[in-house]
Amino acid sequence: MNSHSFPATRYPLIQAPMAGAQGSALALAVCRAGGIGSLPCAMLSPEALRQELDLLQAQASGPYNVNFFCHTPPASEPAREAAWLERLAPFYAEMGLTPPTGPATAARAPFSAALAEMLEAYRPPIVSFHFGLPEPALLERVKSWGSQVWSSATTVEEARWLEAQGVDAIIAQGLEAGGHRGHFLSPDLTLQMGTFALLPQIVHAVGVPVIAAGGMADAAGVRAALALGASAVQVGTAFLLCDEAQTSALHRRALTSPQARHTALTNVFTGRPARGIANRLMKELDYLCPQAPAFPLATSGMAALRAHAEAAGSADFTPLWSGQNNQGCRAAPAAEVVAALMAS
Ligand SMILES: Cc1cc2nc3c(=O)[nH]c(=O)nc-3n(C[C@H](O)[C@H](O)[C@H](O)COP(=O)(O)O)c2cc1C
Image (cartoon, protein in one colour):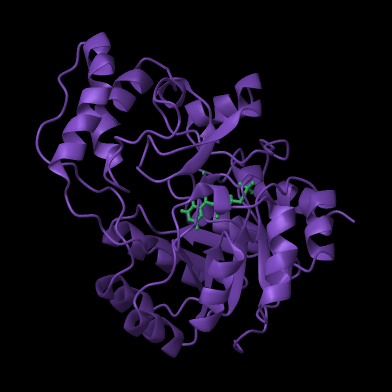
């Protein structure tokens, strides 16, 4: 694939990688329907990743994208972890559970030399990153085998930085988007703009193709993004109810309930701000909780609360990632969502 030429597909549509909510089945269905399917790799074990890559390589009918996080693993902060468990203590008491002991553990690993080693055998057409880019030597390695490299920008500054590092396309992620913010130059959330404010400014600032992400839920939204200069759109939330997605029953129920109207940014599930449907844990910890350990260390402290509540059929402690516009979700094959988004 030529650098900076956008991959040729029937539709300028990328199904957003959604860690924890989908695997190769959704990606393959979107590829078959004429878009670009994505495999989120951040939460996969090496064995699971290899299996998924085998499936994509054997069955993808067009270009596909594999997606990794590239955060810097945080140092352990015992005082903050203790403060976090103290903040969660009333919930543990309420459920009659003993809070965890020992240091917090990480459930999401960043891109690494070992992952690059595995990926090289597959040479996926596109490798996208969230939270910046891997170190230059690793980035060069990915580019050396011909994969296009994409990454998310939440500000014009991040877009310029990514272009200077040689990415092939920039995903302009607006404030509306579901899941984790892709920011990496500054943690200041007030810097992130809505998609339709951010997109034209990034298009104006860089020379590489720009992909619009956040808030697109129907064909009119897609057309608006393309009219504002996007080379393609990346849509996540609208695919969450698809037959091929792995979205949990509790998550599906929340997405189809009136509760879905209220989404907010929160750091209480992972330590990094992400948009999800507002639930009890988010509200009672004021959405952005200063005691939450750095990404991804907040997860292990509340895992037992989540498991206990889920076993009782409650999503009060479950991350219910969703964008602000969840009106495009359909409990249907992914091909129907693709057709609805691309209807003329
Ligand atoms: C459930 C869910 C999980 C997500 N996980 C990832 C991920 O693993 N990697 C990534 O780059 N983006 C992830 N995102 C963000 C998407 O790439 C994209 O920015 C977002 O879905 C676009 O906005 P929309 O949800 O309004 O369509 C996730 C989004 C959702 C809704």
